[in-house]
Length: 182
Image 1 (cartoon, rainbow, N blue to C red):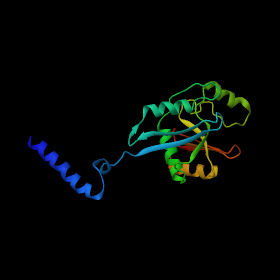
Image 2: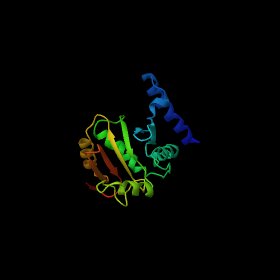
Image 3: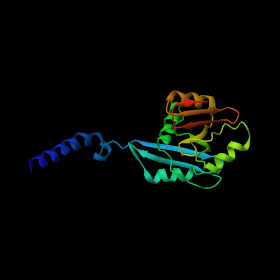
Image 4: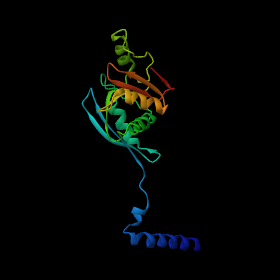
């Protein structure tokens, strides 16, 4: 009983200290940090503005929505993405002072069939036979108003996975595989 009284007394002291400052108890407790991403898909013309994580907790409904959004646009097939890829995108946009800016998605998930179509389209596509797009661990992007070379350099500095630079096609590949670049 005594510890319950001490606990209530402590909260009363907090309220008395905070209330004169024009705050309520709710405002004295910090809100969890939200991780938000904004996307525009260049093939489907769809937009998505989503909070996918609060503090250390990924939001399952948001991850499911992202999986659907980044589906293979040729087949409609959906695969579960590694959520660390979204953290990479969040940190990447912040590192180029574009957090809150819209990420143009050139390619998200690819089925093995779609990957093979792209790989054999011409001799020099740069599409790997065992691309991490097939594993839903990669994404091809551009950031409006930011040169792709700047995005590439920022991704390389993060040292969080693979970084591919496609200057002629104007996009950057990032993935959560081993650290490498091309």
